[in-house]
Amino acid sequence: MATREVFPLVRRLVVGLGNPGDKFHNTRHNIGKMALQHFLQSPTWTDVKAVHGESMVRQLSFEATQKQLGNDLIDRMSERRKARTVEEGVPYPLVDVHGLLPSTYMNRSGMSVKSYLNAHSFRLKNNALVLNKHDELLVLTDDITLPFGTCRFKPKGGHGGQNGVRDIIKCIASEKFARLKIGIGCPSWFVDAANKGNPPPGLQLDKYVLGKFQPHEQDDMRALLEYTSALLRVYLHRGLNEATALANSTNMKAYKLPPKKKKGPPPHLQRLPAKKARMEQETNDS
Image (cartoon, rainbow, N blue to C red; front, side, top):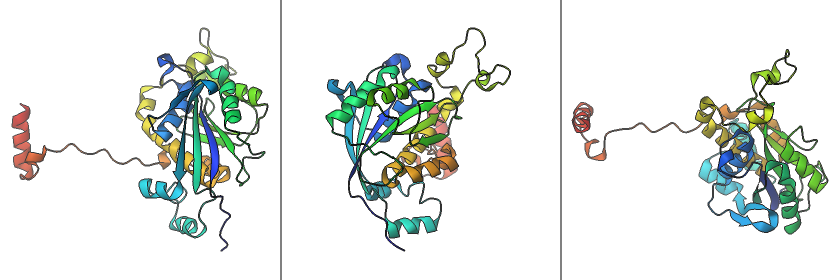
């Protein structure tokens, strides 16, 4: 089997959309920002006034990531798929990831993205689905039409009513950039045929997207963010085609979290027989 073409070092600008300030912290509309912060997990974000946002650059190695986190979601599918990766490699083994969190409100995200592209001389692909060494832009955004826990990649196209994406299209004068749409679910009236997508009196869609996640969604938030990070690793090292196919066939349940550690007796009781240790523990607690 022929070895696939490898591009030693590429650049990707990944933008996490959201609104600034504590008021919007952990709201549905900020899931793109939350996902990027979770993926890069670093305190070294730099506030750059010239690009109206916070940014950081991190170089990611496929080999190092595999050693640290284990096989990615593609290689977990089967031993045959894993063997293919060993034989062929991945198209992008080393990626310079530029993370950008616009400090503007959502509907002004475009000027931050445009300023960053210009400041760092990004030369974007004409088609994000093509494997080559040109730069790419990926925008992480919420999507009300997708159920919570699901994600979809989109290589290009219109804004779909998302004001942040709308402003980016306007500012960079192009629809040819990729998006990772993260499902936030939707209120029942949005899909109710009787309402024809219209909210009941006194309710508006913007109040829903600017609201906090439900308690059961908060419980699953870690799984969702780990899943989006896993999808991003596939996208960065394998390209948009494979990431798209993976997202279309999986959801956050595909990423199994490590089980929570059971709370045991204190270290000084661990060598005692189980029954005696339990009696000692109960005595100490009383």
